[in-house]
Image (cartoon, rainbow, N blue to C red):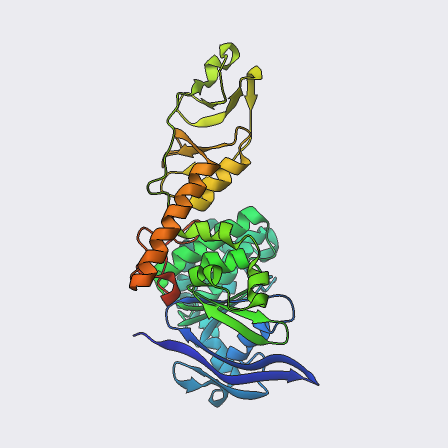
Length: 395
């Protein structure tokens, strides 16, 4: 079944004399991730909370699967949806297993059945079964957020509301949770409304992105590629950022990118190596360990990110720009050294791919060889139509 799962019809929310959400009309497609993004005070969280009536609208209508949410008891409505918040919101006096089983138990599911479902969900969100008997205070922040996601999924709701769920964890854990969400969505196909203030997170996760401006105005709704390519106004352009061209590289994979497979230096031979130019130092398994510099013979120079062959031009450019030699290191799926690539080569390839994409758009076709944002594979069709993207390992 396709079409809109959630519909906002001229919805406003006014607190006193201040408008938090201004006549919002928006369709949230079924089985996709729709991201609400914008600066603080723009009404994105208020809009999310009006879906499950944690906040009541001042005017307008919201329907979920064709039913006006105001026609349902608030408690019943909330139990029919998953909800994940920033601080997980776990009950400290209950074990992980009983936290996850909360909503099924409220819905009348027997304790044993609810706990069995909770154990299944530990595997789904990537948590070991040994955590089942622990309490929230015994978990890391990332583990708590995974439990929060499992709890939201426990009643198998068609709609999942996520209010800045990953903003309180460190960047490494945040990346892991983002990739986990994409994996779950690939498997489960929920209708997800996700709130964030981070445009990079929005572009990574969203099939469609709704950009809110201060005052609760909906400034633009678009797929991530369209949003970066064609911001609707100066506000959207400024919010997306002047480096949106760099982000846009995340929509092209590295097919056709020239890689220099120059010889490397084995780590055990570094002390006697006298490279005429910068050379990649590899270990006995062929994995990059650093750089050998012609100016500092025998010294291992660290630095620079890696670009996994087949990933996006964005990671290729990042690898080149972060490298002490000015060339990014390319590795295969096993992490073994393939070659190097320079920033100028990446930019030239990006220009070629952009020209190809513009030519295809003028003909009304899909972008050939387009990739999704970093960490994802290409969608089946143009990103502007909300096509689902599947996660892959990020370079």
